[in-house]
Image (cartoon, rainbow, N blue to C red; front, side):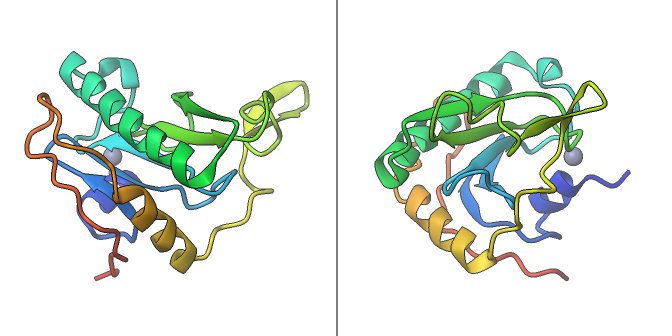
Length: 165
Ligand SMILES: [Zn+2]
């Protein structure tokens, strides 16, 4: 089984980390629809978010909440959205979306209509430069928050590029 998120968790694929602890990690989205977009995933490979243990789901929400507050401070979006749409990578993930208007999540930056069906497609969203993602991760990691009671040691690290082996 090849899962890019498991590869990131194992540090075999690059990512700009915002947060890491025993249960979850957070890193910048490779193709952000707005600056500051990032995501929180469980370390364990679970496809459906609803199959996560309650404690893990709650922990992910707590991590996203703290990073979301930081996103508001740093990037000043109108609103921060939390998105679990269940598509894309088949490893549960919550995307933290800095929204610049009420139609951000439903705009063609995330999804579009193809032959009458909604298709999630980031082909119109450029891949961000790694140095920019690293810089944004450092800004967000500065206050990713204290360890959660549910979340193990809650180690907060500064972002650094994870080299491919
Ligand atoms: Zn996985």
